Length: 112
Length: 119
Image 1 (cartoon, rainbow over the protein chains, first blue to last red):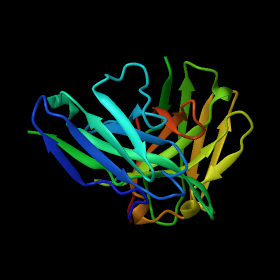
Image 2 (image 1 turned 180 degrees about the vertical axis):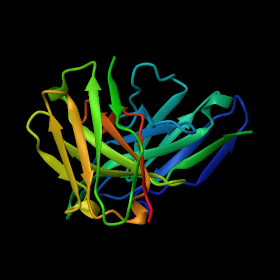
Image 3 (image 1 turned 30 degrees about the vertical axis):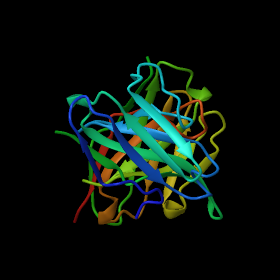
């Protein structure tokens, strides 16, 4: 069971806008930055969003992130077939047992 | 360009240890920390811990405390992750990743190393 909660699946048709949610708590999302990763089948994850809503160079502006309270969202506009992948949110968690990076369980995005 | 090249796949018996290497290039090794993340077959990502390549300070995930050791060799720009007392549920792809501008957050990733634990 993951510390951050994501829907297991999402879908959309080419050109659509889809959003993926990530729910946490005051010890993680509520007090730290949120990061988003894209993992294409059989490959290593790729950082898509850092510090809630910043894109590393090379990431298309079709990808955007937001955060409010203890939840965050990743939005993908102008959906393309190559966006079909698993998406993970992550954040530092300031638990009593010590800080850990925690991930969501992942959302499998299907482009119909 | 930043590259992280990991060692090859391993097959281990329960109770054994495994040591995975991660050779970095394309940047100043001691300027960034290295995180280790694993992914069991068909499962999500699990952060294992982080090591500073500058001074060797470590921060291990609570779940793995006592079984994992992360080290670096600055002379060869290589990071290592050793996991002991292996169990079947340690079967996973193990990734090293250089941190981003934020402490401990994976940015550049290695290609992954499959570790299979089976009797």
